[in-house]
Length: 114
Length: 112
Image (cartoon, rainbow over all chains, first blue to last red; front, side):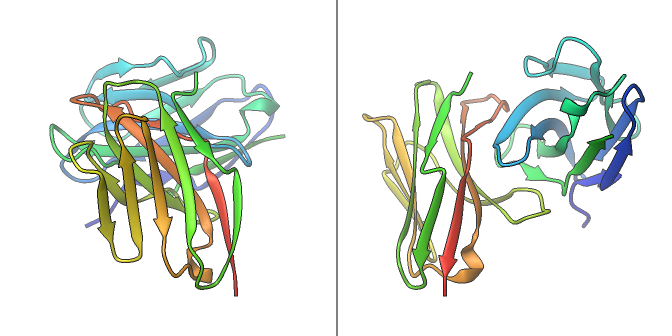
């Protein structure tokens, strides 16, 4: 009964490279959410996805960031041309469709841009 | 924009004491209010949650108090223990909407 799986746990990228963060939701969960947490700060909503659909991306920066949740496979958060300010912990959460609205979070991916 | 305001930012409590963390919201469409606990290097974990049809919910040493008219809710940790030292986040989401908004977090330290 695996929980929400995120990988990699730690990711180091040089400025200008691309970062790809993966999230496999809990079994039976079809809703995925991405949050960003800066050091000493709270959780900032980025995007909410269901299978093959972006439901709400109001928290996503307009440029360089994109997210997908394909029919098969994990959800991907993609950051192109990373900058130092992208360094943060990125958490994915999932929830079941139409049920209890408590999210289950993964352990996060800590992105460091050098 | 911050839709859920949380205070204090940090809190130090002696072992055995009561820890109290407060949250306020503005969106009257919110109808589910969870609290999450996060240890360093880990993801947030659901601790306890409340719906606005009750004014209080208790699970072990953890109690949520809810004041619908004031649009405030709080987490009380009774008999606080050093193992409770973590960051606590309140959150809120509207009915039938999976878009959950989080407070800024409270870093709790329980001194032995």
